[in-house]
Length: 171
Image 1: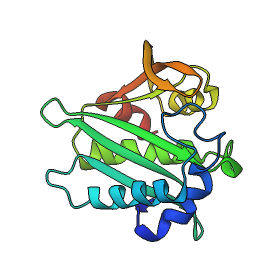
Image 2 (image 1 turned 180 degrees about the vertical axis):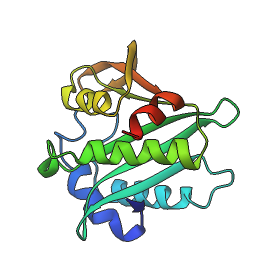
Image 3 (image 1 turned 120 degrees about the horizontal axis):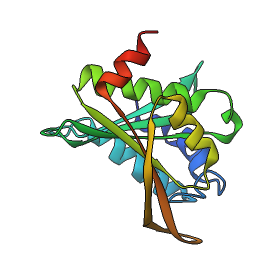
């Protein structure tokens, strides 16, 4: 993974414009203008001080096939959140897990976080599988956390602590 760049917007749009990708999200399907705005904002996040958002493009060969973000939610409490998205033509191939592993590494190793969490729609079984593969623990369900196209969405909450990650990442 590398920092997202403005030139990545077309690759991002190749999945951000698809209904199946944003089915469980508050965003999308995006227009080209919405995607360009999102990528521009993501690129600008790298120059913010203090930096709290770390957006990356995931590549296979020369192609951007997904992205992941580490969000620092509290520097004082050493808490962060990860998010990821993968082009559907790469679903089921370990790309989401690879993105998640890299984000956890950057959160714990580079940013000194103690706890990192992620959420997903309870209907998104693929995302829940990825979070479990990352060694994250299911903490529970938050009810009606987001209003999406088909109504209120609950969120499954997963997390991993620094010592848990270190124990599993050294195998």
